[in-house]
Image (cartoon, rainbow, N blue to C red; front, side, top):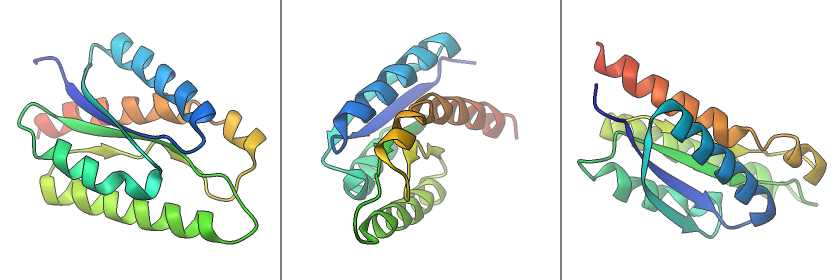
Length: 138
């Protein structure tokens, strides 16, 4: 099997957390022998779908990994952001028949809980690589 090519969409919001998530994801992709072919920064998790769509349209992208962190605020805004982003991300995966791994932590978590979940980036890469391999074997 050829090397798996991954696109990565990273949220700038809560960049101190998403930076650590991104670095773990990159290290794990290298460990798994996957190539991160494209990376794009977007303002936040809610802004990811259009960037994901453009990556999925590329013939040299097998899967997309999302990296984001949505911390709880004083309102339910965090829930709206994650629910809508996750729904659209799932739709894009199905529309393009390519895995899109959800590496977005939240909603409903504190900054401390977000720091404890930086491995979501690594887990998203793991999921993307496994899904590409398993779908190719169908």
